[in-house]
Image (cartoon, rainbow, N blue to C red):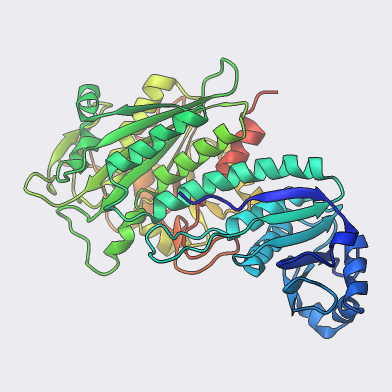
Length: 489
């Protein structure tokens, strides 16, 4: 398990700056104004900071980014990072500054002088998130990363903001670790075990095995996993931090590996299908964050854990399965398995918990990547209020999300000759027909959002807050949604 670096918050001691070892960082406003720590460092370096901020180089530095001085005279530090940041920055700029600090820090110790900065929590979050590195399966000596010390004017307030930021970071790290794990490690059983371990932080966790799922009538979900040696499971995580109100339900697709089944995927790129449990990973990370920060809300997270493999027993194209709801589904393509998992778990969530709202997440379709690339997740909803609240939360957290349409014409594409519906509607509007399929399992009274995160769960190049690989997209936005819309006073 990957943990964020340890970060301490200490009252600024100007006299200690000269002897600070490792890496040292100061903040300077875009117009070159220095706070007391900046002025002290400037004096110690014989006006080197002033010469920098008066130069053309400083004009080219973007907000939240910095300029590095190696082995600065007058300081014990190995290097000095001068970060351009307004004293009242935007959330995005503060987090970008934190990310710049993480890249500057490397494995060594870091001291950051933030003075009276009013976005210390966001800077801390950026520092923690960009410092993530997945090394569980690398051999050889693993150099432990030293912590960071943030020097500020109000350390107690900063520490409280930092505590919340670190709860979010731990949830994001948990999601990233799950999504990055290879499928021979993260089996359905291992996944369930990791979720059960969260009982120790206050979550109520229940694991439903195959006999229990059979009894519930989850034949749509069970059909996906019949070709695998890994048993299918549904894990229910409850956080009851609110009053007596009905919970918000989060539902995640947890296909730990997706070969496509009998509708076998091409070999090229199949190794990436270890991330096909990304929706379940996000739900798990959100639940961890809510528990760690003691959210005053009732939230239930449900994940369907299966493996989609070809086998003599595997589900065939043309098979008909019956969902927990009772609807029959003609399986046209066994590689459209995520919706078969989700529909049963979504129905179960509504039957058991009568949620005030339901949000499902899934790496569901390649079509959403064609439409939105890797910048935005697809957002589908039957309710403008919950959808608007989520989009606002996603924007606040700089997690790209774009609303997509639903409609009867798309729904008609799922008509089957021999069953109540098909599991695919053809190539056209593939992400929309997938959402239409799921909407058939949403009760009329349930506000619902479907998030297709196929393009955002894992990426091939670095982002501002994450190295390439799993991003943890959605943990911050959903935590913000709960914080702003579901927590009791």
